[in-house]
Image 1: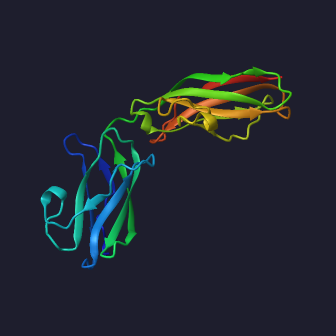
Image 2: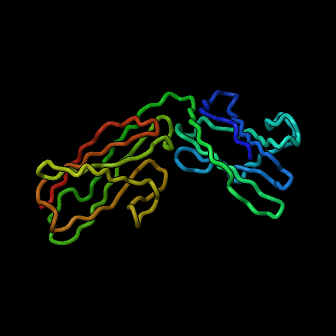
Image 3: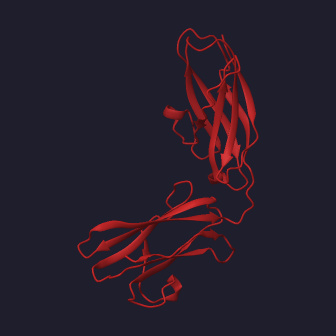
Length: 232
């Protein structure tokens, strides 16, 4: 392999959303196929099937000279895809059907929408007043929205402040996973982020402050919501 075509950044433009992906080899006589997987900044794979690169000399897939050991294709990027750092993984399959990852490439994607900070609302902590003599489960949830789309939300979290005002400043992530048993979240991808936690008789008694916030992939922060929890 000689190398991949440099892609520093891509910005979505209406009617021109194609990114040209190209890799060049020193020799290609043993190659059966060349393909890629493309991952968005949220870790999701954008291609359902392997995205083939071709050395066919056809301009429609970005290849201009057939059989010159340069394999290319154009992948469409949607304005609905999140902003951030994208990853392309390159694979080659030889004549014996052996597949090997041969390169990895990152580029920055801008979906062309002005990056607007997320917003959170409708925080729920149930129960938020409790007498603790044994281990008690607390269900926590908050609604998060983003005008750039839910997939632009990188994380929704809270920090707990003890009755004496101290905190370990650990950000505890909430999840929009639909995994009720693990996170207490009822429906995946509905914008309601949830977490179940436990408290017991060893917790300091008094009023705790739960500080909620969200961050998007452009690192913009939402409004802050504070919710008090009384442990007796």
